[in-house]
Amino acid sequence: MAGRVAIVTLRRPEVANRLELSDLDLLHDHLARVNAMDEVLVLRLRGEGRHFCSGFNIGQVGGEGVGATAGARFEALAESLSQARPVTIAEVHGGVYGGATDLALACDFRLGTTASEMQVPAAKLGLLFYRGGMERYVSRLGLQTAKRVLLLAEKLDGERMLECGFLDRLLVSDTALRAEADAITAALAGMAPLALLGMKKHLNRIAAGAVDAADLVRDIARADASSDLREGALAWQLKRGPVFTGR
Image: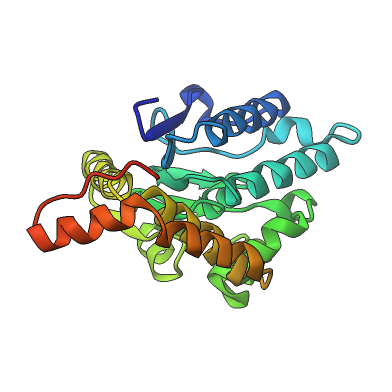
């Protein structure tokens, strides 16, 4: 944690940052902690080692009830990540597989490298992907891409991940990826909090067809009355960087 930025790092590189049931609960707890920190404007999700995340431990899927339990917990975690208060960035270096692709999709921005690849082998395993994940695939990547990934279990490389909209940026190396993530983080962290987080919240609601008109009016009025708006206008006039306080 550093001021306006929080970073969650998956640290099981020997198994490509594979997730266990307990990890899903732990990540959910971390997210709740970050959401409670008003000063945090940006949350970055990354993996240690060669890969971002290999999804849930397939070796446990065959256990009685485990598949359904993992699916429900993955869905809850992805939904919470999608609705996170800060702006979220997934740093997708290397591979991202299975349910982890939905965790990345739930983030506001996804950065990758030419070494990135993604695949969801659910149909090969007999798993029916959970509703929230399928909805995200269709709404964010389109029906045909969703069918290629979920029905054909097609593996997409970095270039195709960029082409279909899964990635927002494609970098040539892990070093370049980290530099781009740092630059985007700095830009976001320098924005006016009421405007930045208010627009994120309402953009997501608009996309979901769930606009709360009264809440939107309140948030606009709060931003309009803020000292940050006055500071932004003054900084623009004086051609200097603004210093926002979130008030």
